[in-house]
Structure formats: structure tokens, C-alpha cells
Length: 587
Image (tube, rainbow, N blue to C red):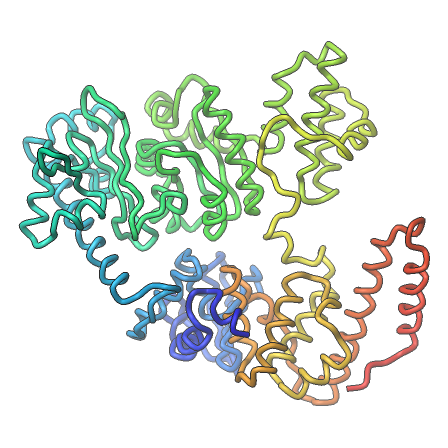
């Protein structure tokens, strides 16, 4: 269990302190008006529009469930969903709520924490310095540029835009007690044989915020002539550019499951002031797999809106691949007659952009269409080349259903034999690097729509977490691998490990454990489990569910066995499945 305890960075004891200290009724009541009805509390669901209350909160289970939209979980899940936080952000939020002093995260020491806090303070002062400079005489050129780009005063204030003068920041900060060595390490100053100087000089400054709204970095655009055109802060103890997205602090508040991914700071700001508050961008660098994984905490869908030149298309292909890998359904929008979203809005208005987003192309279709443009399909050898590229794209998709759907579309659109496509998918490799994995982590959480299996498995796990005696009885009949689903197997193993360690656990505490391990909303697993007040009825249902899980496990093995190569194993598993047909589990 020790590994489970540490995977979030905080120990399981800390997480349990926070769960117990933040009663779910009290926390949710800050957002939803709840009314006691029997053993539960009911209210209007904050996650979808409804007129009659279907949002149920259980004080006993410390779980919530909406019978309308299906959202469910524990207190961590609720805060993650309502505030659009990651799991660690939710932990910090709940700790602040009850004035709980969190221990240093991971290998952090008190000295590390003090240094980070000092950098945060220096960046806050720096952002204010740049903002105030923009309002004065030294901000004239930047103001003219922003006026030309039609960036409103409200947007400038919202994003904290500012100006870095030729000199002054480092001296101001040193007057406030920061030494030069610290300022250099923090990425705010530099030095040479002639002395020290500000890192950013004569630039329009874009503060970069973390999800909680703290300034952690800066991007600067040169004003006038000079190189580089854009300059960014170096990585520091508070800033990792591969895990930071510009505008995410505002986009996560947009209350939508779709994000708009653009290329630059100005695109984000232009979209925001035009009403598209769900826009964000990577920081002067390519969108990476880390960005996609981080973004998957905040949305299920994304629209990629990059420039339409060759570099933009290449970046789009990579970004859509990473998004798919992270379980995000991506589409690609194009902007005819404009080089970027900012220019398109200026020329055509916000409604025209909204129309373009509405007809955005499915990302797989975009990849296939991009591949097609390399070839003249009227020439047989080139048509075969396109077929191989398309097969390589489809081969990386997660399910046969997805592949078959695209095969039919491609066959119809490009007059290609579907059978030939299926044959090529067996060995096709695209020359284009779309960075698509064979399996998406998010999809691995589900059991192929087998509701009976899910109900049986979650009831078994719930009983194991709730009752130590029942856990022992269940494990005498069932092994972890028989749970089939990777997430269920992990929970089974974690519960058994906790029981062996003699830990006091509950269904809600196990939800917290799984969230800490996967940074995901695992609360749905137990929120809808049927409670049996009658012991006999409970044992009968549990026996039935154990048998169902065992049979599903054996059936899955049969489905995967190649009978031509493993006939003996096929016969053995078939015999075991038949033997179970006439048996009952006795608990």
C-alpha cells in the first residue's frame, strides 16, 4: 500500500485528513442549495440544466451522484469538476478551506518551498511593475501597437499586459531586498563583465499564470527592431513550459468541455475579448504530449486553430495526434483569407469565426485529407501510396469500430476497395508522424459498454472496501486478474494491500486513493452502487456478481484464444466455463 500512498505526492493519511475535514455536504452547499430528504440531500445539479432536483449527496457515503447527467464522485471529484481543477489543485483548495498545512510535496524541503514563495512574490511585483509602466510615458509604443491590434483596455487589464523598459526592474527589486543572484536564478535579470541588466528590455510583456492565477513566467514581444521577436522566461522552480498553457487559468473557468487551441498570446487575447473565453496556447513552443495530458483534466473536446501555412499544418497534425492520445476528441478549423484568428475576427467578426468553428473537420479526416494532398490519385502507384498512408493513420486508432467507420468513408470518398484498406491496415505505416498511440489511457477505464459486468465489479469492490470480513470471503473466490478491466484490477489490488496492512479504509477513501494515483475522476465507480440493508440479500447479490465476473473473465479468454494454435488451452478454458455454469458461490 505504500506505493499507493505516495503516488499523489501526498500520503494517503494526508488525503484522508482532508476528506474527513471537508464534509461533502458542507462543501457542496457552498455551490448548491441542498435539502435533506431521508438519508440523503437533494438539489439542482450544478453540472447540467434541470428544473427538478436530481442531484443526490450522501452524508453516510460521502459521495454525490446526479441521476440526470450521471456525474458522481467524492469531495475531491466535486471540487475538480466544479472548479475545473486537477487532483492536486483540488487537494490544495480543500487544504486551504480548513486551514490545513500540507506537508512538502514529494522531495520538497522547507527551503525549496520558501524559495518558490519568494519567486512567486518577485514575479507578482514584476507583473505590477510592467503593467504600471504600460500606463506611463514608456508605454506609448506598446499602447499604439495594442491599439492597432484592437486589444481593448479591459482585455489588457484582464491579461495583465505590460511593458519592460530598457532598465529599472532589477534595481527596483534589489531595493526591495532581493539579491542579484536570486534574480538571475528567477529569470528576471542577467549579468556580464559590465554588470547586471534586466532580462526583458523594450518588450510588450505577457504575464503567464498558473491555473490558480499566480504569475509564474513572462513572454515578451520586441517593440520595434530586434531579435528574437518573442522571448520567454527560462524554466525556474515554479515554471515548466512543457506543463504550462497560456490562458488556461481563464479557459478552465469557461464551463465548457471544449477548448480552442491556438498558436500565440495575441490569438488567445483576441479570441477572449471576442467572447471565446475557452482559448489557450502553448508558450512559444510546440504543443506536446505533456500539454495534451494536462489539458485532458479540463476538457473532452478541442478545436485546433493554427495558422494555415506549411508549418501550421505540421503543428496541427502533431497536436491532433497528442490530443487523441490523451483521450481528447479533436477537430480542426480553417480560416480562409486570414493568416490567424486575430486577423479573421478583425476582417469578419466573431460570428463568422463561430461559424467556422461549427464546421471544424474531424481530426482524423483532416490527417487523411492532408495525406491525400501529397498524391495524384489518378496515378495508380500514387494511389497505393495514399492507401498506405491512410492505413497507417487508421492503424493507430483505438477501436475496430472507429477504424471501420473511417474505412467506409475513405472507400466511398476516394473510390477505394474497403477490403484493400483493411488488408493494408494489417501492415500499413504512415510516413506522416501523427503521434497516435495504439491505446488511449482514458478509454482503458471502461468495459466495452458491458453494464452488467460494471455493476457486478463495482459492487464487489465496494463490499471489499466497506467490510474487511467480506473482503476476505471475496478474495477466497476471486483473483484480481479476473476483474478484467485494468482500473478494477488496480482498485482490487489496492484494497487487498490496504487490508493486509491493517489500514482503516472505506469506499470513499478508496476513491481518493485512485484519484491520487491517476489524477482522474474515479468517484463514479462507487457512487451508484446498490446498498442492501438485508444481509441475506446482500450476500446473494454478491455471490451472483462474483460468478458473473468469473464467467466474463473466462469468456474473454475464449474470445482471445487462437484455436488453431492453442486448442488445448481453448478446451481447458471451455471446460472451466462449463463447470461454473452449474455452481453457486457460497460466502
